Length: 535
Image (cartoon, rainbow, N blue to C red):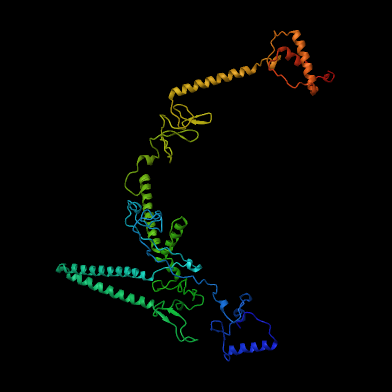
């Protein structure tokens, strides 16, 4: 049944439902009808015909098995190519500056770039293109033939027909040309030409026979009157029926093995027979001789070429592989010939009648080469310098040598001026002298500084005067002024201890006399003094 929601049924209702389904399957009762009026096949299993409970289908239906969530707005239409919407007469703001269309910008314009755009000429405004958008499904996005116009295929047919007509016309012209040449020949060559024509006719007849055999080989026959009746397939005529089958040449059980599936017999079925009388020597004989061997070598060459990075495949592009193999053989023969000529030119050929030179006969020459202990050539042969991909001997900024020709203190420089700053201006010998003078001066300063450090001066204690200055030795203090300063210092300390004795208006002066400074030193608390608490 195709009902979705199965309500509770009694045992009698359930039995009647089963009988009804059996009657429908037997064709005694009419089939069940869905919402759309279509008959439901009674042989459909229940797990397929029953709808899920969440669909809440009240009537029997197979709608849940169809694509019921399909988008009604989906269409398989394609872009209307070349369609135009509106063509303006004047340039509009925001349009393409080149052609004047509003549907694209100047960067995406496909028209020919104008010398003066439509924005400035206000002429030949291009019409607006029709812009469409489609919502394609999964298959529609990946369909490479989507939007293909079948009416354009006649162009391909016309192209091939034109090629065939041109080929027939060319062959006809060649035949007419040959006939004209034969008619213009001399009378003395008529007999020879008749003989040639007879040979040509024989070749044509042989070609016709071979063509007929080939057509018979490619003939496909149907198998009929089989056990089950009717046709079961096709079979191709693979050999001439007059020839003896290879598996019938030697009926001995221990003879060459015949594989009926591949129809191959690799070994020779008659190894003891006369080779002149045998027309079949086994599949291995054909594989290792003739065009089969050449084909095998071509395959090996294509594999090796592909492994070395060349885009070459025997099965994908056989013509290209064959052409490259021919070119390879020609290049290989040329290389062998060149190598042979080079060796013969260097060492000579003993088979020729030319006399062997004395240098080769005695194994020595007048050229002298000297080597050092490390095996480097000292004299007798020019040293070959390796070439570099960078520019060499480039002189800039008045330098006479290149950068890197001077080395000093782990720094490269120019040899002409001994500067270690690249791209600096050359100063020549004057720069070298100035650099040496500055170096000598720096060395002298360093030596003098080291000499001063070797004999350090004796540090004398300095007596500090007022405000941190040195106390002069000839300093004389006034006794009365010093006594007054000591009294003032005592009063100041008392005021610091008792805030109430401090006056409201404090007069501050920056002028300190040597007597006041000496009084401050004398009354100052020395924290290192062990008797400071008794003062």
